[in-house]
Image 1 (cartoon, rainbow, N blue to C red):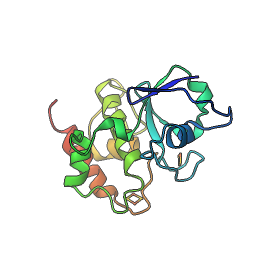
Image 2: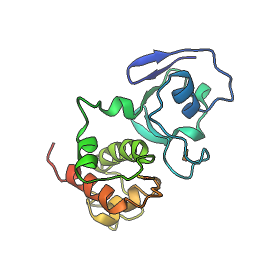
Image 3: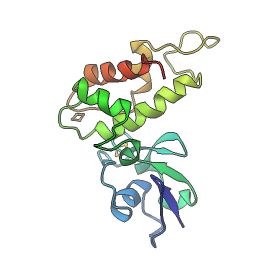
Image 4: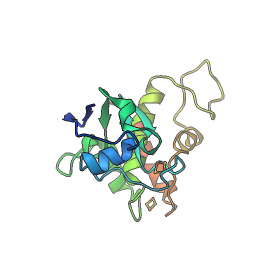
Length: 166
Ligand code: FES
Ligand code: FES
């Protein structure tokens, strides 16, 4: 079994019960993805799987042989942060920072979902492109909890990027 994470192929022997999150953290030695609840409730473990956001604690690594994963380490670096990473810093989109890797991975995919025209539960008009209203952003980020309550600044950071033309 082999999984490509941030452009590097990892193929260590792995117990079939290992979650994708534990594979990333313990076998690939990438600790950026966080374990909050370990059962799909907090979003701290969010990564991009083949470009789509998932809770990596809910997936078994063996289910993803041949797949491509992007973690927070692959979104940007300290020297070259992504626009969302810059915006989270500029807007104080965190306090303790434990939820932040998941928030940024989730927001990265979420903005692409909006660009691709995917509706959310907050979308009023399914015939029109989704808006970037606060209700839309909050609904779409509702799978990522922040126990520090940094939500207003998180939304400000995401809005800055969403409102910036590519
Ligand atoms: Fe995966 Fe909480 S650690 S959702
Ligand atoms: Fe502490 Fe979100 S910044 S949990």
